[in-house]
Length: 142
Image (cartoon, rainbow, N blue to C red; front, side, top):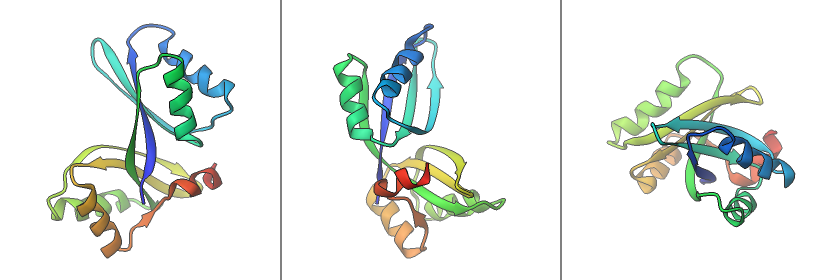
């Protein structure tokens, strides 16, 4: 019920991001979504891709500081307010969102997020019939 996400730690200097992207490109790994949060010294690039475990291995072998974690990905109707409605369900249960990013794909809104309580989040997702994107379905979306 979760998908894998890469978190890549990048030094804030020219060429570090392109090195990562070129490694994935050379391996034929398709990016689905990415986001970068930065500080003065480094950035954290989070990536959802077609083959996250293989991407992790490729980047690790190249000496890139990378981790692999599980996140939730919800598929929502592309209508104003759907993201707010979904996040409100977690807030009502006292579940904090550590980080979130969103995008449109295949006519649907997609929310990718990590919580402080994955088990409780699963219960909220199941009990409210929220559309979850499984990792095996990611390649069908691109």
